[in-house]
Length: 310
Ligand SMILES: NC(=O)c1ccc[n+]([C@@H]2O[C@H](COP(=O)([O-])OP(=O)(O)OC[C@H]3O[C@@H](n4cnc5c(N)ncnc54)[C@H](O)[C@@H]3O)[C@@H](O)[C@H]2O)c1
Image (cartoon, rainbow, N blue to C red; front, side, top):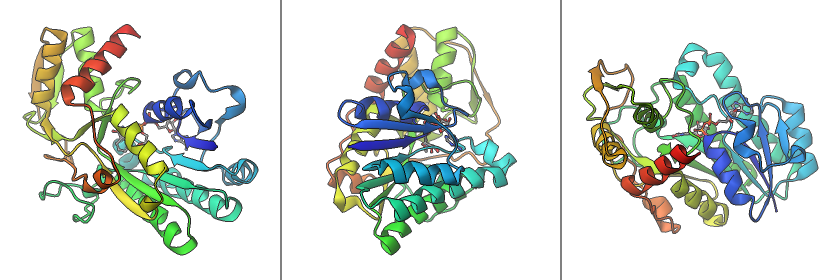
């Protein structure tokens, strides 16, 4: 069975590649804009395509040639700020790139068994109704959120109109090894971890009481592996969270316990557009057999252990 992971050299993609490499022939398509070749050194050159999902002819040729059984589409402009600065460029990648893949599969790949699209909890925006449900009001607050919403709707529509076996997953806050802490807009736990590791001061935007549904990467891998084998999920959209919310202050305390020390911290103005509270209703994936296994303590322990021994 052949599986293509777009954006496979990034944080989430590299974990999926590692997991599926056991039983599948894994191909990666990545332009290395935020990902790293070293994240997937176990993938040989013939299975690593350094290219861009906006390259329509390359996508057509690749899909036509390999006729993948499974496609996990993660490649995207992932920085919300970058999409605010340059929405025309980000829509080319996040919407047109997604359409390139869907269209090429429609035309050239009747062998396709599953196409997974990485959507985001960002589509909900600042809704006050919690937990966020698939049928909750959608209120995108950035080009990123609009592009993710458009991508997931196209993914769903290609099932309805053309029978493609597609599923979209709205990822909540995923964390784990290989998440890049280098930008101030990176996953907040990767920044917190880096500050603890280097004994530097951490800045809370706002009062630190904002909550998120933090998902350890291995729980995401579990969810994706369930969806891949589940025809029932075709044409559907699911939240991928844990169903629990924790505040940034609570996560900071967990870091203190695991590192057995504290670091300086300060509070500054909340960032505009940042949402206050967020957590997922995960009934949909639960019904398919998904059961998140990692508590915040367990996930963070494994993450910190890995990072500090890498
Ligand atoms: N990390 C999270 O908490 C989170 C939450 C919601 C949604 N997501 C989505 O999950 C997916 C993976 O995110 P991640 O956290 O692993 O980010 P990441 O930046 O580590 O991975 C993205 C990968 O896509 C590649 N890429 C970007 N543009 C490309 C293009 N035009 N052509 C080919 N490759 C390209 C990058 O080089 C990188 O390897 C993204 O679609 C992201 O929007 C992530």
